[in-house]
Each structure stands twice: as structure tokens, then as C-alpha cells.
Length: 148
Image: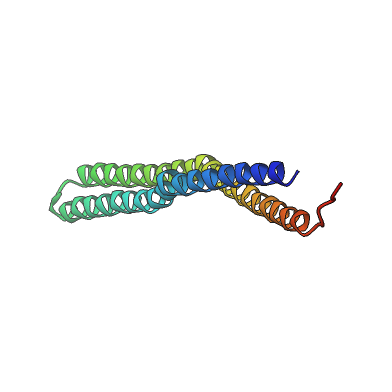
């Protein structure tokens, strides 16, 4: 009996350790990548906004050179449309980022959590089975041997 409990404990412990290694790899390869990706996306959005602002400022700086009032209004309208387009693009990029992080990143984190939890539980149960096997072995070793 103690041998069977000990072998089952070793098996559970081995599976638990394997799952913990997989969970650590998962965190390193996938979940950590999403964490890094979030800040990279933010930098990309900020870069897009900065370029748009500088472009709009450059366009505005050329406005005083216009002498025709109709051309001035038309050019101001174009600059305004470009600026609104840049705002819409930045909002779209932000929303895409949020949607991706909410969907896949959350899913990847849950996979990591369940791998880690299951691996930890199996490791603990395996250690407990080994403890029981050792206790049964010691207990049976202390029994007096029947002599016939």
C-alpha cells in the first residue's frame, strides 16, 4: 500500500512540476510579451499624436502667408480636417489596443493562472502522498514480525 501511494505521489509531483515549468514558460513567452506590448502600443500611439501635432503646427505656421481670404479659409479647413483625422486615428489605435489587451491578454493570463494553480496543487498533493507513504512504511517497519 505504501509503495503504491509513494509512486502515485511521485507521479503527481512530477506532473505538478511539469505544469509549473509550463506556466513559467507561458508567462515568459506569452503573458510577459503582452505586458511589454501594452507599453509599446502606448508609445506608438503617442508617436502618432506627436507627429500629427507637429504636422498641424507646421501647416498653421504657413497660414499667415496666404493673402486671399477664400484660400485662407479653405486651407484652415483642410488643416482642421487633418487634425480631426489624426484625433480619430489616435482614438481608433487606443480602442484597438484596449480591445486586444482585454481579449487575448486576459485569456493568456488566465491560462497562466490555471497552469500555475493546478501545478502547485498537484505538487502539494504529490508531496503529501509521499509523506503518507513514508509514514506507512515507517509504521509498518515498527510492527513486530509474527513468528510461526
